[in-house]
Amino acid sequence: MKLFKMVNYQLEVEEEVWGLSPFSKILKRDKSKNKDMAFKEVLFIYYYSDIKSDYLSITTPKEKAESIKKDISLPEKWEMDNVIEEAIELYNRLSCTVSETLYKSAIKSANDISDYLNNTNALLKERDDRGKPVYQLNAITAGLKSIPGIMRDLKASYTELLKEQEDLTNKKKGSRTFGMFEDGLN
Image 1 (cartoon, helix red, strand yellow):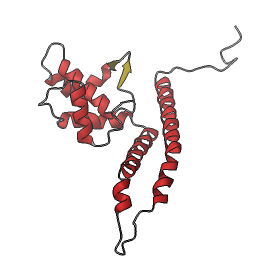
Image 2 (tube, rainbow, N blue to C red):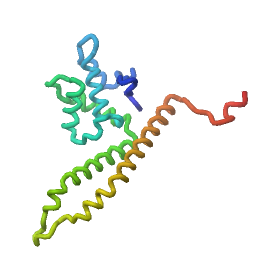
Image 3 (cartoon, helix red, strand yellow):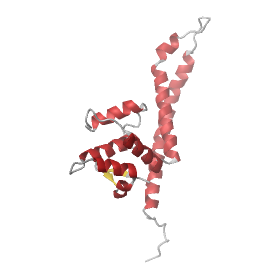
């Protein structure tokens, strides 16, 4: 179930979202007439959770939250609370497919590999009890050689994931594409 979507650089929230408990709480606690804070909090949830978010590559939750908070101009004192966490959990539960969960895990693994490669100087200096290097240069260079394949696979996975989401959206709306001759020869 897709609760939000980005259209022409604007977040569109499906009307039925506001009937879901955590989102209803977000809406009700915003006492302003135009509901700007509720919209910003939902935008935060989208950027924090959605597979299409540019913040997906930030795997540290606190760092991701602070970056989004700053970029969407939430107040400095604003913090994620139980309502926001509940809404994020619900959003993930309703919108994440198995493929999306696997893709997010692959992104985290790619970030871990990146951290490993960023630490090569320390790794090459690390020695065991006998003074021998713990990590060999060939292990690091083998890791470097696998990077293009990892990048290619991540891109292909992302493309497949977007196709899956589109298929699910089309199924949900009841649309069907007819093959040649399926709808008659008029």
